[in-house]
Length: 247
Image (cartoon, rainbow, N blue to C red; front, top):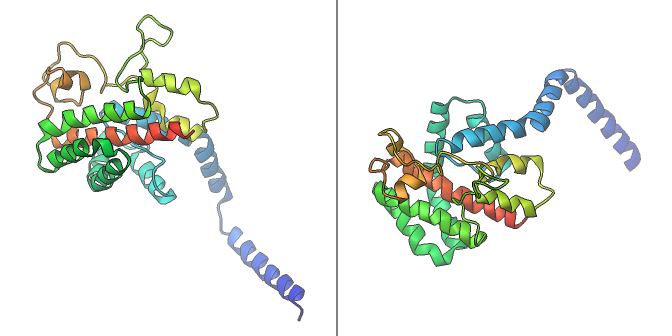
């Protein structure tokens, strides 16, 4: 039998195998899943990113492999706040050493600051780790985009009133994919983390709020969860702004 005939026989067997497999597939379900992934998932990622951000959590969905992305998506999209919080606590706790190593490698001038922040977190000195991490997030933001300020706000009387200054970065970038737009959305909206609170309640003093913490208006923010949230913020600032620099 010639090589060509061998190929035809092989293709025929493969076609028969595929036909038998195709008969077992729910193609309507496959179609619906593809429609969701292409049309609805970006909106869901954006919505969940904003909800997480307003509770102090930041997640970079585009980091890692496809299984990593699927894990994050399945753990966060459409889940209740308590389930999301549990996942984020475990996720950031598990990844913190990797985050520290990556940050030290890419920002050598900030190595001592990075190491001290993570050392305080591991030692449960949260009243020290949190403000250091907040300052670190702003510093890394300025390293990547000098003059922008990740906590800065737009002119309250200007056309972008109510938006953060980081929204200006997008004015110089075109051609972002819909998934990129979705996961970068926290850079384009105001959040509870950056909200200015002048007369905080006792519950608000427990929040990860940059204004309250850095201006000395809160003495109740020092929790492990808030420290993990601050780590998530630092890593998100690094990954998102680095992504935009290369866009």
